[in-house]
Amino acid sequence: MKIKILYIGLSIFLLSWIIPSLVQLTLDSSSRYPFTYYSSVINQFCYIDVENDNVQGKDMSGKEYTDAEFDRVLPMFYYRQLAMENALPDSIQGVPVDLHSIARNNFFFWYKPKDKNTPVIELYPMFESCSGKVDLENPSDMFRLKDKIEFIDMATNQVDEQKSARFQQALQRAGFTAPAQWVAGIPTSQKAYDEGYFVLDSQGRLLHVKMTNGKPFVKDTKAGETINVSCMFPMDIENKSLYGFLFDTNHTLYYLSTDGYGLVKVLENVDPDKDRVSIMANMFFWTVVKESADGEYTYALKNENMQQVDSLFRPARQSQWDKTLPYLFPFTVNFQDSTNSYVYPRISGYYFPSFGINIILTLLTFVLYRKEKSYGKYLASIITLFTGFAGFITVCILARLKK
Image (cartoon, rainbow, N blue to C red; front, side, top):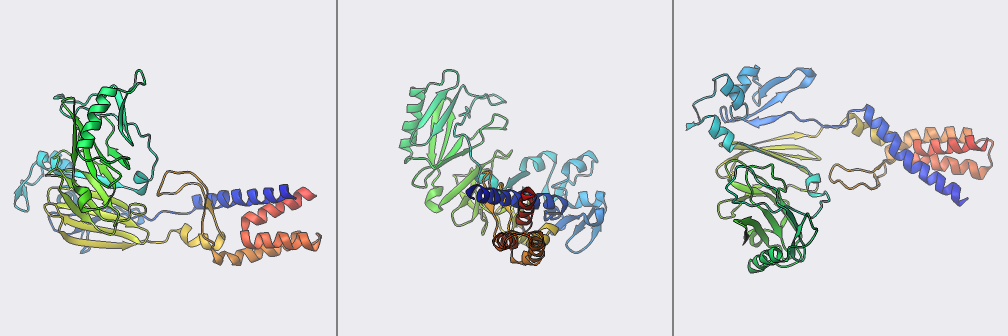
């Protein structure tokens, strides 16, 4: 009896994962928003409309543009195409521009919750930030930092006690309090320059740690005195105007300026565990997009002071899968989630609209088990009523095995 209960439970569990997954593959399950960018020429949002497979550039007033016209309305985005056509304007908003100045001030930042909620191997390479060479060289050791910092030689797997002690002393002088909550950096030599790592200690102090001329550089950014830092995502951009972006525990997005580690507020009401954020920045405006469960929020911010000059909201549209799910399945099982990289079973909430189809399946179950004893007949019907297709298929298999 216990084995039969285990079999029924396992069968329903697996079928509640497999069947909805197969149905979802046949339905459109994504909510797509048009690409949108703030124009520094006409000072309004422009977007690419892809309805009916007809790609058309438009602005918010409804005006339509040809491909060539759209390139000229968004010169800060399509500057390479305009330069190739020798059509790049000499100035925009009264400011002289050229290919180099535009490229130097353009950058993109893409964030999704998985970037925060993903396990990492807590070993990092410490690059020489002042090597005087064009390309960064990979070091011969890696460091780890929790209760203390330790540099481990990759060839011998031994701790470099002297180097570790130098960096540990520098950390202590800067006020580091163990253990470190996290270490954030760009652990690859494939970057334009190195700014080391940012470390959040147990007291919420955000420290900047790097190696210059073979010596430790550790400095308290003081950001932890202003906000409660939650997470940080360092960047390397050509104009070196910022170290990266960070979230605080009040769901506000900032960037950390290279000008004295100043904190500059970018956007409020951003949940790093749920929302996606993209930033397309140029020398005049930042186009900041927050994608939440209820829709897409787009903001145009002035580059020099992050003052909002325009905003746009597009409500989320229910996909065919979202519309169909509550009426087909009472619940579903998933092993993955878009907000993190951890794999484990996740059971959705119960969808009561599915009772309509469940009742039909229950009647079929009752017919299938009509020759069974009352106990078996009613038990199979109850299983189907509350578990839908997964339970119905399970009891059908049991009925077949009995024969």
